[in-house]
Image (cartoon, rainbow, N blue to C red; front, top):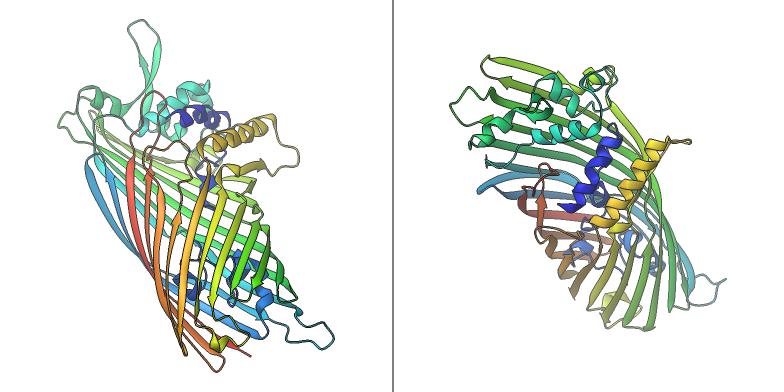
Length: 517
């Protein structure tokens, strides 16, 4: 695809860097993970209060609290994934346990030293905003292309010699160097006396045979955030709040790609290869959220919030392993990237800015009165805009080299061209029956890709029950998420790329409990 044709030379420009355009949406295209109550109403929280989740959507909602509250929650989810690749269907199932917000809200009661309707409140929470536990598998027969051709293309365009690439301080330690070392790619003399770089599986493809390809990516970790916020209530009509978050990122990925000769012909000299890529990103950063809620009538609430980008200081670590089995003569050769990095893991430090967000929201509260026991429910909706194309990468070095500057400049240009801003919609409601509440909701997360081969979106259908009495509350919720996306196991510059279409469903049961005092 055109967007990757531009990016391939960038990878060659600085082979030790690990950032790729897909990193841009890894931290931005995710449904909200909030309390069981708010998740039950589709995550719509931009103009509501009464929950610790307001810290992460519109901190102005903190100002509605008159008492103190402590809450905590847990989630259990089951992932069912289907991937369609090369006329084959692959299925995976994965279970996971995670957390939802744990925090405290300190509301200011009526203060005789302040005018009626004026007070301030504080809140602190810790939450797992994003859960990276996932698996993608693409498996099928391919007579069109080979993953190993990416190594051949990279080396052919790099301008480096074989000896330069195979040295202990290689410029291409994770990709072309292991491929050359194991003879997965090699030089071939053409009839005119010139040389061409060719991958071993290409001989099989040239003969009209097919490879059995197997791609498995397993990811884990999450984004955790420690957040504190402050909000003020002015005349019970205007509410303004500010929160600051410290996101902590831990992302792990293990990708295994194997290809096997499906023919009985040993003259093509290729039997199989297995490539494993171990990758980890860790880091921390800072962000701000500013919110405002206006209550023109007792039963109407209008909210607006602006989320700054996450300014994140990141470190990537990477190791790769490659085993190639050749035929006629039979030979098995194994190596790792450490052979070409002086025995150490590859490491890259950089700064990443995530996209900024804006939220507008409206709520209608039935029988809105100061005594919440007489309230009978509400309906609420959020419209959120996420500027996915605004992700940016920068060198963390005080004095970056010219190659680093060019790398990040080009990478940012690719991100800007690959992604676009997207709208997310959330709607939900609650009905109250004495101490029991019933909730329903829906959410839609729009396509972040500018030029994608398949439709990509996420939808959530949600519901739940709540119990509140004598200062104790317990909320139970269920979220059914349907995600449609696509996955390129590899990309080539000289032809259209093969890819898998993904449909993942995740059912999550969540519980949040707390006390007011």
